Length: 352
Image (cartoon, rainbow, N blue to C red; front, side, top):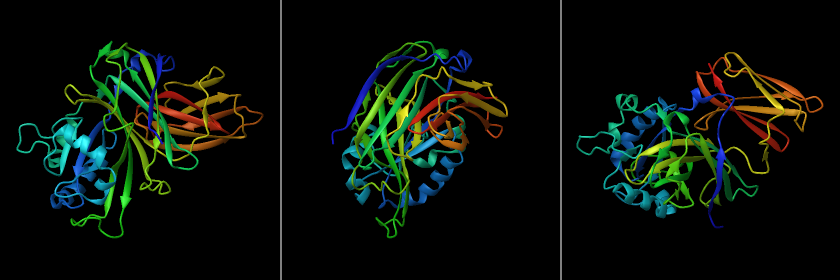
């Protein structure tokens, strides 16, 4: 099946529910690691790297390219075309090699791209906000041999118009892997966030170089899921990031855990749906008479695509008022996703 990445068009993106004061977006930083199941130093560095990322999951997400240094492992052999392109992009000549937002981890040090330079102080120095927001929704088809997703990119009004030549959107299918027998020689059996396929290719898709403040573009991604991917394991995610080729800087990244199949239809006309108060402190109320089924489910998702809460309610005659507890959330911007039958709605809200 041919991979397709189709630009939908320019959309208005003024979010009246939260106002311009929230038009500065939280940045999700991305760590790209090149590693190998045959690399002894990798097996020594990876546990600490994973712990560091886990302890900072609200700031940094990790993707891993299984590489050919010191020699190819089975995962590299399955996806060598994509990995070779990314390794060439960064001129990778040793493992474990890392790029943080496209740059060095330890500038000024010997081997500045060694993953050991990803320290807490380095993470604390990362920028907290971004000129762009990204929202992902991704599904497998019913046969689970292809992926279909949307990636919505919005430029924030706080930054004004943004000019970013050679800006590209990269989309990566990643998987957590466990082997009963070692696939290499370094003792590792568990491999997290392994890049299994890039869409439409490892070259990414060129975006507009000029973004008017407060506008959005939505991209549809579809492509084949390789046969070597375990589509029944529940460990698949879609990672997307925006990168400038002129200096390799990554502007924003996001992650979405793939948990369902296609067949749902997003309802974009939400005029009959009331969400209040916004910002919310303890409870978020949503009232609507548009639900098509008795059961209504809801999910709260972070801006980087991580689901953090879920629940359900009962609609009577299509009408329901949901009371969603948000008192346990940290202050910031979130998405709430509602589903009734084959329809779903997405709203933004602010937690005080």
